[in-house]
Length: 186
Image (cartoon, rainbow, N blue to C red):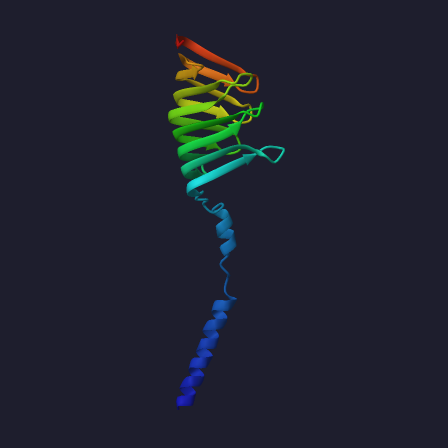
């Protein structure tokens, strides 16, 4: 009698298995592609360094930050406690530091915000210059530093304040935009 029960259970299991296996298959890959690509969470790093190289393979600029966070939906890399190092076309080293910043991926444009200080030697002179503002934009490809905010330029004991600045490091040209005020030390 026990053999009949086991045989009956085996036949029922076989029938149920055949029904399940021969039924319509669920297409998991079709659902995944219909829902779009998987969500890209981006990346985040602390005490990180980004190095952008030029066509010659040498560093065009280095970007150090206490925290870096990529947000892939808007293509931005957000930065905290930023330090940017770069060389102008004359080979002069420049540094920029700020509390915050952001870099649009693939653009080469770094926006710096909060107590921004840029220091380096102006092309064609041996004088160190320091540019300070609350907001500056640095186009690493064009080597142009600019702002429309209040800015201070200190060089050779001279202090100039203005509303807006454009410094083209390739062309060795600094232009203060408007409301320029200055003091000259002897």
